[in-house]
Length: 638
Image (cartoon, rainbow, N blue to C red; front, side):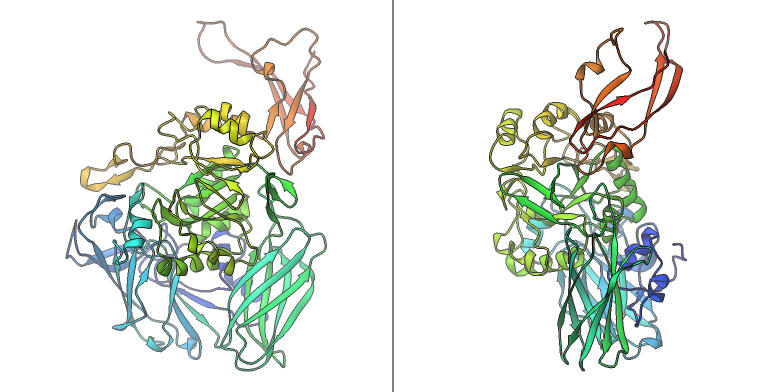
């Protein structure tokens, strides 16, 4: 999606998921709208859609580089990455910085009669917003969360309007600073995720929370607004190609209704797992009593069931799974926390290339498009409320939990919610997650035991052996620290022999995915890791593959040779040209894989590098169920 940086992009959208679908190339907003019975939500982007596609706004920073100078800055972005303000790591306090933004825009005159919201996907960290000189609402606090203002009465439709935002790098709330700004990572400032206007019909579907289970039962909890007369909410399930799944179903709503619940059952739906990321969508239409459609949305979802079986393991769709993952910050050396679907797809591709099936969102919720891609490409997700050894107070934290869950609730990739990290949880917020999540996903406290899951960090080999053999589900949300263990792959083979096969081990997450180095334009463009403090990852800052990449790829391969002697022994003369394999997939039979072989001739020691391929071919994939052992006949020449 390309457009002129100097102009805003106006698109029509349907529901919260559509912008992500468009970015993924699943379907355009226009195509989705054409399939709906009623008017859609219309969206006008005021910034660019991501860090790769930006729109320039007027900008001034109050301290640090270029302080006091009105200039132009691409949005979305972090201002430090464009020559403004100061670089700031964790608890290293700097003089307070604020960024003043100005942007002029003209909303369509055709929006008359609609309810219009100004939506910020995130701002770092406190945001004070004005439209045409009038406050849009209370100052938002919390740097990684979507927030919005009803600006219907403040806009001049069909005419130029002025949007102003003052973004404070440090929060006026000390608990926000404790949870977000004092952690062990780089701190940035700015409008680093998109800003848009969303225009809803007066009577509208405000949001949707779905619960789609592996047995085909489907429930949609629909939040309504502006309903002034009796009507109905009508729904239709579909595959992504538009094929209907069952027939339409509906429920009546009374005048003044603020919610509706719809249920149905799909017959043997294709299930979602990280190995089989089968997705569906639901079309929802609010209609009048006479059947006139008033508002329609589309939400994408997957049929799947997640369970924590006490003293047993983590199950998806009734099958025990083992998570093999890494901790990921949203980070790029030249753009900070501002990202794009291109960068998200790069990271997910590299994780899957290492045979990972999971990712922990350390230590804040990611961009929505990252979760869209996890749904589409197949990664299990731990989605996390910010809090690094310090916590949000309940007053400021409760709205952030609500914002987190309401935005992310329909992603089938999300298995758990994390309430902070390493003591950065407020137990008063634990039950808030379930208030917005009809799936009632378990809430974890990373580095301790909660919800029946022991997530303790950086256990020794001996303590890992004890925990893997214990009576509690063991899922370390951080282990084998990439810096202190000399590389994330170092020791993994030994640890994985304990963790990969234990009945109560649910896997684990390596720390961390990438080296987090900032390009410092005040130091001639050097890559700065703040000494040894910034995360040292499996991948370099620009995703260079380090040695651990190949180690992890091998150890976490879901297809393993059953006999270790295959790796280091000379085959006997009686070798029958077959090898035994272990299938460590959770849901995939090896008959769906492809196998190839090569016979290689290596030179004698000291004769130089290289080898010759003497012969090569394909082997017929054996029928080996998940978790089973089978034989692969190679069909080698005589």
